Image (cartoon, rainbow, N blue to C red; front, side, top):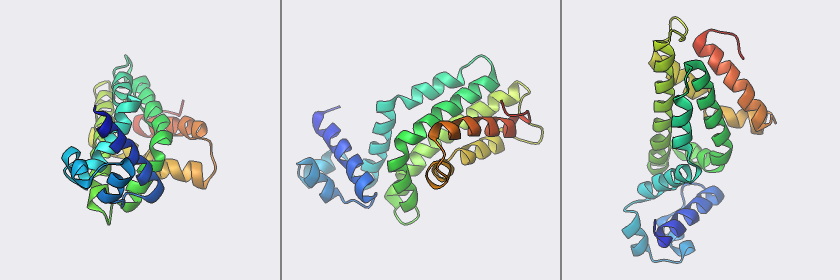
Length: 193
């Protein structure tokens, strides 16, 4: 990645965290020390910039490979728990940007595009895990993989994580531990670990 592109992404991430996703392309260009034209050469639209910001955060953290590695565990229930731990651990990292994108997505199509891009990929991970649980005969009767993925995705969403950590003052480690147990039990029908 070019140094200019990296500088733009870092600047945009900082501005989104500080001001929310409504930050303009002109503000990003000015803060990055480049012209608006140069910014548009790198990112053709504000939506593509916001999507690139969140993808860059994911790439720097290696979250995709860590999730994929977790999902390839030998035993499907343990693989699912490992996947949940990776995701919930990452929630603390992305929370500042994710919360502003989430708050703005209803009124801001660019924020919605960035949010939907990343949450769609996360949902696919949950679907992969749920399908493995079904094949192994560990998915709770009455649940389809699609419904199981929806439930797990919602139960471990950024708003839920935020309510438990910010609103209720629970530590991220506590939230991770209890959500892993609760979500696993909800999908498998077994008692929490």
